[in-house]
Image (cartoon, rainbow, N blue to C red; front, side):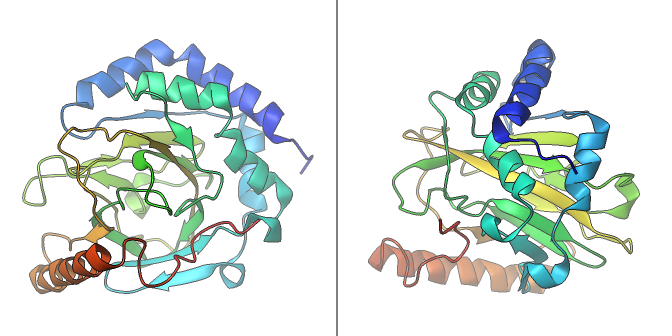
Amino acid sequence: MEFINRIELAEIIYKRVNDEKVHLSKQFAESKEAIGYFFLDNLLPEEMAADLHKVFPKQDQMVLKKSIKEDKFVAVQMNLYNPVLEEIIYAFQDRRIVELIGEICQIKDPIPDEFLYAGGLSMMGNKQFLNPHLDNSHDKDRERWRVLNLLYYVTPNWKEEYGGNLELWPNGLQKKQITIHSKFNRLAVMVTHNKSLHSVSPVVYDGFRCCISNYYFSKTPVLATDKFHVTSFRARPEHKFTDILLKMDTFLRMNIRRIFKKGIKENPHVYKK
């Protein structure tokens, strides 16, 4: 693909989001009382988005994270991959885009994360999943609150029935979730706080759903009631025994973090430049 840098990509993204600002602000405001979100289709020119998919790393170039919590491939050491993938990630960190998305989502002074803590690239194939969870409340140094999750999907012709879709559970696991189709060339943005339970539905198709993700942080939490927490997993409603195990796991890890403020070991999901 023809190389395009983060400045050029940011120009395209900024214009597309800004052109839809009124609609996106309305979409977010209507969902704000639970888990605020918006999504925007056709973010980049179609050929450009398809080219990002073509250079996405393969399974053997990514890290497999597999447990009862999740089953997915991730990549964060961006200098190992086609440079345009690093450019698109950091295009979302352009100051104008950060401020614009913060304004749409009513977040004051959002801050992008140059270290891509838990961000970067992710890919999910047949039978892979991400169970319902709350994202870790802070950045890697536990100095800023995680406030926004940006997900940009780049798999052409990915149908909703294939799975791998973002799910929001604003009313808990006993009520029906909101499903946001991981549609090609769609940007989905959701707020993260102590109640923003979300998941990715199991993939039921012999192909890979590819995603480019960023988090924004802030010096203040989204909700006044927010408290520090580790990434906290639950199971899907039909898996009750797994849910008991996952709640125990969260309880143990929270108690460890009360003693070791930054954890026992460094989280490897960070871009080491």
